[in-house]
Image 1 (cartoon, one colour):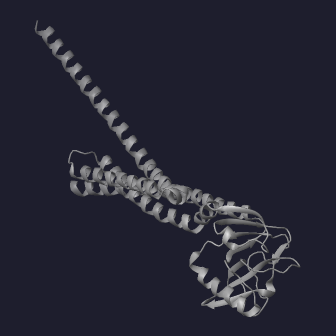
Image 2 (cartoon, one colour):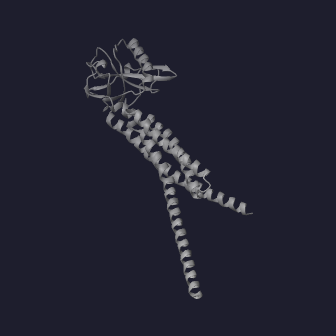
Image 3 (tube, helix red, strand yellow):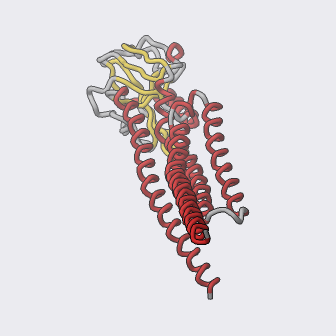
Length: 317
C-alpha cells in the first residue's frame, strides 16, 4: 500500500510539473505574440500617420475642404496623444514587461515625430507646388481669345487663356517698374493690327530692364506661344499695375481692365507638371521617412536593450 501511495504521489508530482511547464509555455507564447504585435504597431503606425497627414495637407482636401483636412490631422494627433498615455501608463505599471514599456515609448516618440514632420512637409508641398495647380484648374478656360476685341473685364475669372494663332507679345511696348525687384509687363497683341485697348499683359519678375524692348519673361521668344496662365501671386498685382500705367503714359495706349498672365505655349502641360511635381515630392518624402523611421526604431530598440542590461548588471553588483 505504501508503495502504491508513493507511485501516486510521483505521478501527481509529475503531472503538476508538466502542467506548470505547459502554463509557462502558454504565457511565454502569449508574451511573444504581444511583443510581435507591439513591434509591428511601432513600425507601421507612425508610417501611416506620416502618409495620411502629409497627403491630407498636400492635395485637394487642403484646398477644397480645409475643415475636413484639419479634422483628419487632429485625429492623427489624437492617436499620438493616446500612444503617449499608453507609454506613461506602462512606465508607471511595475508589473509591465520591459518590452512593452520599450515599444510604447518608441511608438509615442516616433509617432509624434512623424506627425510634426508630416505637417511641415505637407504644407511646404502644398504652398510651393500644388496650390498653383488647384488655383488655376479651379478657374475658367477661355479659348480663341482675340485681344484686340476682348475686354479684360469679360475674362476676370480666367485661369487659362488660349489666344488666336496670330497673337504675339509686343516687346516694343514693354515696361518695367522697380520696387526692390523689377516688375515687367508686355502687351499681347494681334500681328499687324492696331487695338483700341491693351488688356492682356504678359508679366514676370526680374526679367527685363529699364530699357525699352528688354522684356524676356516666360516664353517671350517662342513663336508657337499663344497662351497664358493667370498670374497666381496677387500680392504682386499692384506693382504690375504700376508698370502698365507707366506703359500707358509712355506709349499713349489704353488699358481698361488689365489681365496679368504667364506667357507660354502649352499651359495644360505646365499645370500638370505642377501636380506631378507635388505627387513626386510626396512619394519621395514617404520613402525617405520610411527608411529613416525603420532605422530609428531599430537603433532605439538596441539602445534600450543595452541600457536595461547595464542596469541589471549594476543591480547585481
